[in-house]
Image (cartoon, rainbow over all chains, first blue to last red; front, side, top):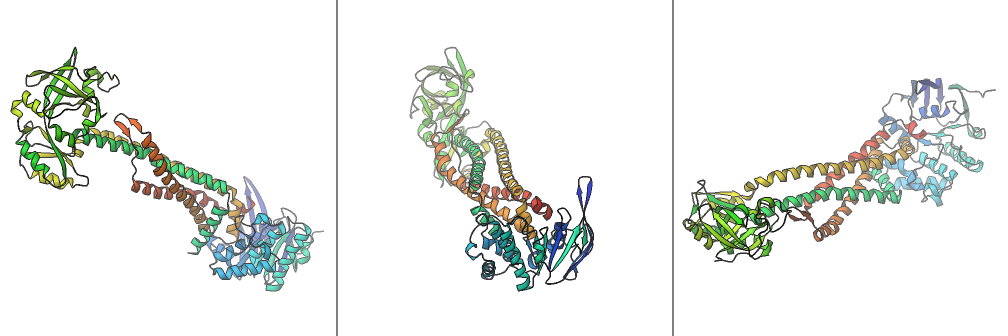
Length: 225
Length: 401
C-alpha cells in the first residue's frame, strides 16, 4: 500500500543543516498495524508526516497504492489526505469551536457527502468509541482521552485506507492511553484499516503487528541494544 | 459549492462560538470605521449643499436672464417677467436693475452695487428677507429707504470678512449718503441690515424699484437681470430653452454656470472628501487585517490541522473572508442605523457653524450603500492577505507552531 524509497529529509535551521531522515526504505502492507518507535528527535514524526503527505521529502520517492505521490501538488495531496488517509495528532487537535460530532464530520462535509450520511456515520463512530453522550460537547468539555477518541473518529469518518497517529497517547494517563490504543486496534481489526503510529511508549508497541525503529534518521527492524 | 458550504460552516461556528467579546469589539470597530467613512464626507457634502443653496437662494436663483448684448438692459422686462412666470415649472420670477454707487456714513466710505428690486417678487425668489439682523426688509413703494448687506454696513461686527472695507458701524435708522455712478447723490435711511453669512450676497445693497426709477429714470421697464426660481424637480434645460424662445435678444445662465466662484471651494472640498474617505478605508483595512492577522497567528496550529485533515486552503481562506464580511456587514448596518437615527438628528440639533452658516449632515442613502459595498470589499481583501499567508505555509511548521 505504502512504499518509500531512499527517503531523505533535511531541515535548514539558519545556516545549520539538520538531517532528519537518511536514505530510508520502507514498505507497508494493507491492513498492517505498524508502530514506528524511536527516541525523541530520531525522525519518527518526520517519517510519519512524509508517509501522510503533510510534508515533502528532500530526496527519494513515496508510493501510495503504486502511485508516486512525492511530487504531487498540494491540491492533489490534500485530496488524497481527505479521502484516503486519516490523522490523529499528539495534542488532540480538535477545532475548539466545533462540537465533537461536528469535528468528526467536518472532513466528510468537505468530501461532499450528504448531511444525513455523514451525521449518521459520525454519530455511529462516536457511539462505537463510547462517546455517544459527549457528541454535542465542545472539546474543552471533554477529557484528553475523550478528545483523542473524537480525533480517531474524525480520522475514520471518510473510511480511509490508512490512519497515521503521531504519539496518540503521549499526553494521556495510562487508562486513557489504553482506551485510545484499543480504539485504533479495533479499527484495524474491524475494518482492516492500515494503522501507522509513532510512539516512544513501550506499552504501545504491544498493539502493533510490526515494529520498526528509527535511530538518527535511519531505519532498523531491530531494537537497539 | 462544497468549498463554500464548508467555509460557511467553519465561519459560522467561529463567529457564534468563538470569543464573544472579540466579536463584539470587532463589530464595534467596524461601526466606528463605517461612521468615520460617513461622517466627514457627509459634513463636507453638507457644506457644498449649503454653499450651493445659499448661492441660489440669496444671489443667482436657478436661472439668470440677461441681455445678449453686453452692457445692455433687457427692454420690456415687465412683459418678459410675466411670460417667464407663465412657463410650466417656473416657481417665481423677479427683475432687478443695478447701478454702482459709493456709500458714506460719517467718515467711512464703501462702494457697492445698488439694486432696485420688485420687493414682492424678490421675496418669492430670494430668502434674503429671512436673514434680517437689524430693522426690517423693504416694502413696495418704499422711498428714501435702503437695506444693506452686513458686509457693506459693517454693523459693528469687526469679525466680518470685509469689515475694513465697510461702513463699519452702520445700523438700522442711520442715514447714509449714496453717490450713484450716474451722478445722482441721495440720502437714505437704513431700513434694515441682513446677514446671510454668504459674503457675496451680503455685499448687496437694495432699494425698491420705485425708488430706483427716481434715481435712474431711463431704467423704467428695463432690467439688468431677471432671476428665475424653478419648482422642485422642474426640467431646467427645457425651461431654459423655452425662455430663450421668448426673446431673441436675451441669454440665460444657470446657477451652475454662475457658481464659478464657489467652484474652487467645492473642488477643494471634494479633494478633502476623497482623502478622508481613503484614510477611513485604510483604517478599516488595517482593523480587519490586524484582527485576522492576530487570529491567524493564534490559530496557526489549528489551520495546520485543518489542512492536514484535508480542508483545502481556499476553503480556509474563504472562511476567514466570510467571517470578515459578517463582522463588516453587521458593523456597517449598526453604523448606518446609528448615523441616521442618532448622529444626524444630534448634529441637526447642535449644527456645526461654518462661515456660510449652519451646516447639516447631508444624508445620501446611495452613498451610504456604496460605502457598505466598498467596506465589504476592503474587509475581504484585508482578511485574505493574512489568511493566504497562513494557509500556504508548510503544514508541518503550522502544526509544530
